[in-house]
Image (tube, rainbow, N blue to C red; front, side):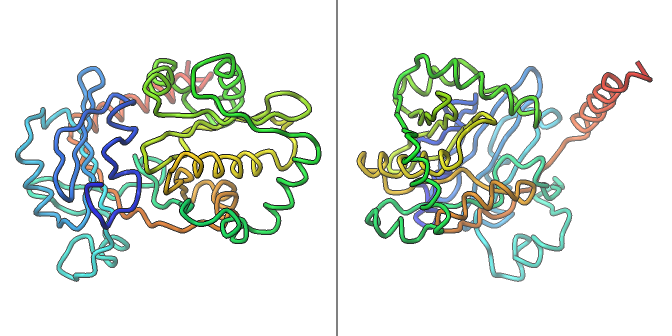
Length: 313
């Protein structure tokens, strides 16, 4: 952990973004990490900080070498700072639409363009399983017991195999309904080859009905991806989470992060909260967009709108 104050996977030395989505670590300090990613000629930088003010973050950025005209910068501060002098105080993070770091202006990120969720739920795996079960809502226990009686089972896959085809077939529904990007095949092969993930496969009367991919960065585990069918029997999702908890406990993991939540997904928020989990506020996120990138984003938006409008085309 970079900071003892941040009991979360985001400050783990083996976190998914730098290793498996093309990000590389530029800085690792006591209370900050900086990651960098380039896509074609445009770059992104994300600064994750804890207990650092705006000026200290700006000093870190000024030491880096990058194209300032074609690099979008994200600053995610995990700390709720109480000082009224800090631009990241609770009042400032609530009221301010912009803040300034050095010569750069940053806009407060919305749920739609954040790189990291505004909050997450975490299960303490160091508790006894009976204690974890008692903290779940009764509806959760009833649902997974009902699924067990109907013959639903959960298996775990630690290597790429037949389940991968099932996962992408199930994910097609999410892509069609919600416009989600299909996970990169090479990324999946890489994390499983590195023993950094496990696939949790739910089986019911119809066969494979749901698959969750859990990222492993010991002592933390992180719900990374999931896909399911419309015909999934009720309670299979709850049973998969129960068996995941048992599996992770048996492997010596201490925390299970359920993957983050935001206000735009109330159904997912309610589902995760029902497991009696600990709530973690993940702080605020701010974005600096250089003028050149802002122009390119507007052009992309216009072209996308043009292509999607049959009358215009």
